[in-house]
Length: 496
Image 1 (cartoon, rainbow, N blue to C red):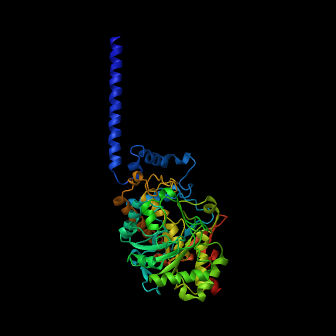
Image 2 (cartoon, rainbow, N blue to C red):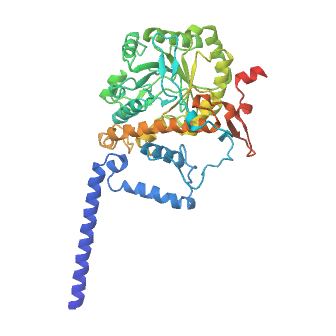
């Protein structure tokens, strides 16, 4: 009995010791996770947040036995997200063993490597490009890759601050989205594109109409370089912006000029723009008031509608937009009806070459810059868009990944676990601006660098010299054809 009692006492003491040691380890990990600033999930969810990274790391070895392989997830797969993650770390972005990409999928773009590419000392970077040469204050845009429209309100305060500072660090512009200009957009001192949505947030009068006085005041900020009239966006063409009531706090209500605590739903189009002539009138008005370049953002529905637009522009070149942003139907948003997300709007893969051809056909290539948007987050996407005819490329979700987005799909619920799309102060603490702005900058710089690498590989000295002949498109039978044969440029059609 004595031996048994001693054994039981020893086991009890051992259990208490293990339990105490475990508790101490958990406490230490809790403190470490709370104090670190790099990982928003661990900061907001100490200790248990570590399991996400453990499972993700183990997935590298076990994912072949489960359903989701590297490139099967939607809307963005693991390979895309991991590329962004590596780019943000600034530790190199090479991979081992071979590509996990299925290059037999129809529509896949394959770049045509040159037999004798330029030597390393013949490499060049893209020069800045002027937008709005006819405006009183043209914009000399330094980068071909920039931040697409994301509103303060849809994004949190620290997210906007990190994007602004990161954009300045990387030398790229930042689009405000339709939610108006906040102090946090200006904090980093980056170049700003002010987006005018259908509700005219930030530049509206008491009746919701465009106010020239407020427009002029916004234009006085030296950081505000251009104005973009949003006609539609990829995830919800024909539907205005949706900001849930839970996100409309006093600060956002003041910036937007709307009631606090009420859902903010924009009209599905600009009420005063019902024809292309009225659209050109508005473009001319905004450019005259602000003195700065003015463009439009739209989703393409058909060639017929776009041709009608260019016919009107050609007849009134003085009212021409300085740029056109083409958003694909695959574009993203914080909140939109599923039928619009899934079923409405032409893909940017089809729309961009078409619009480029129409612009060139009507002799507007030197007048109108094309900006491509819509699910373009990795270097291959950006290089494809430049080859297809874009002058610039913008990304929203790529930069969200750089902030730490884990694709939790909670953007519309004010419960984003990484603090990016929530106004819950507790969750926002996970997003530390001082850490995240450098990730934003590194992501932008790495995309630019690797697009330059692709351009070098196909035999041109810099990305804007990429052409459709440098890309092959995979067909239904698994073979590929040059993009310039499938989607010939206008100059090729005119010469034939």
